[in-house]
Image 1 (spheres, helix red, strand yellow):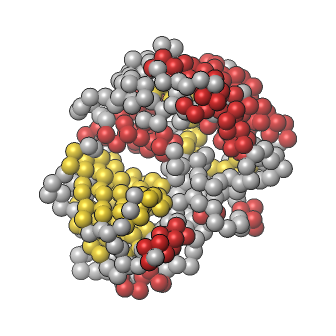
Image 2 (spheres, one colour):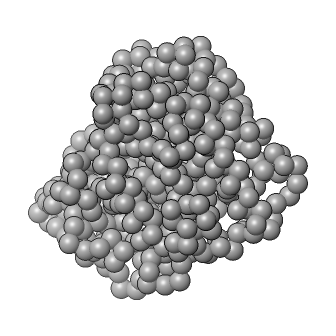
Image 3 (cartoon, helix red, strand yellow):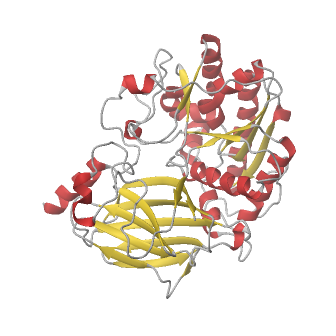
Length: 466
């Protein structure tokens, strides 16, 4: 019974995930600033993890940019060839052979061309990279040229299989995706980039954001720095109500009320909203099974926003640590009780970060003393300007009670120097910066489990190291 109550409490807190638990603060959201206007000859790059993401998240923006005289290009990370359930509904047959998955990707490409043509783009404005649907995050974490390329479990393919894609034949390596994105940005030189959100629960959505962060860092000083506008698509229980409601506004998920995300909104005209609705319906392979969900994004406005980067400064060993993301400098025993006056988990101190000498520190506050049923998976990716990202450690730390394991990509790390400390209602993870490759900044997130049941996740934050 106590474990059950603990689980319910964890679910209620929901860290900074996306579960909607209360009515939106309409007055707060109506004050959101408007997206900056587009200018003639501006160059707008839309990065979409799958065909249809660009329509449901950015159809209004695409129309507005074109009407302002801007140049728009859409690049798709995958052809969306892994949505078996949608295709069973669409083609009324089970698809399990390799060629059938490629057929799925070709169908979705054709749908994307028609959808974007309805908004004013041509096929020449679209680029399909063709990397594995539902596999790009695993590539980011584990598959670089030090070993064999990623092999998709369903398609059993380890290279881009689409002959009409510019990446045809590229092996499923992280370097392949980085190089393709670099080429797209060097060729197009965008002023603004719209990309999937780091708090999105879909793995391809978060991986595209991560790849873009690395690419922009690699290109720093080589091209003018574009403005980046993340858009959110997959978030549990959001948006509601489902189905097509053009009379409603699209608000951020309630769990972000009180957060430091700089949300902006783009308001669609009646004509733009009608065109958006039409463009989504071109994705027949998806709408036959999920129209109730996809059309719930066809509303009065579109949303864009991200957390600002955190910047950590080292503290002397004997001084009290200031955990960025917490509401105050704290002492461990009373901290969890003193900082729960806002709704965003990092703002109320449930997850916070610090740098102490040569350690990166993550603190997780819990409703009670962490027990053996509490499991946490930490992802920590470091970026250093003088080291190729392919050679940087890709650290994953898994805790179970008071035990933990450390992995760099798929390899277990022994003598890692990682420390895990516990208190009455918190745990603190200390990770040597040397283990992280001496980074300039980190991209980090975590997932929390009660036993094997996922409770919630913290999306990726960019944390600068001094």
